[in-house]
Image 1 (cartoon, one colour):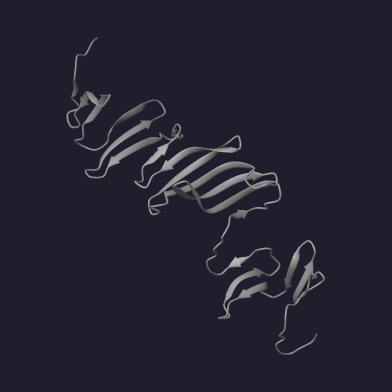
Image 2: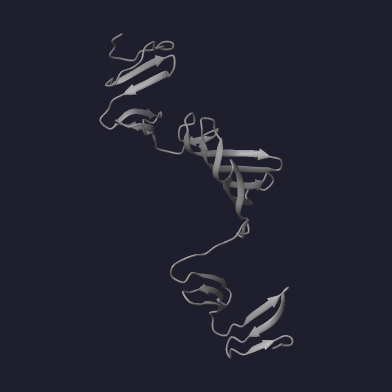
Length: 232
């Protein structure tokens, strides 16, 4: 059919495949279904809205898809081939589990079936009655399942499920600062020695056991005061 105007009617059903070099073709095969093939100087395929603005495009000669606006997916998003072995990034939308609602990003290795082996995961969890009060959890893979490693609460508190290790070749340090009076405690490990103490002038250092002060070191005079007997 050759026409210079608009062709109207029912459905158009292609019965054969398209070919490389087709300028604008619609094809069909039993295995791939509907096929769109195009060839342009900028894009091979362009989807436009009723305002003649690009919605998404396939740049010429590539397998990329560029969205020009937001994209909303009703189901999961898998980055990687879902039917082939290899690493994948799985982004899941909100899923309800009891009284909680969550979304997650899963790094996984698959042999063909999604979620075969979880390498790591990040989850956002919130009570269904208060969706602005979210908790962020980080998980690591353990024999195909995921194990909680870190929880960040809606109060910004971070809770580690295991040990926290700081290491560096140039004197690593751990600092805790109260921003009201800028009072800072530092733990430093150097090449030949380690130290623990305050770094702010005039702030005392307390050594405690069971929340009871056993030793006080004056922040100005460096005097040491023991709360009880000192046995030599």
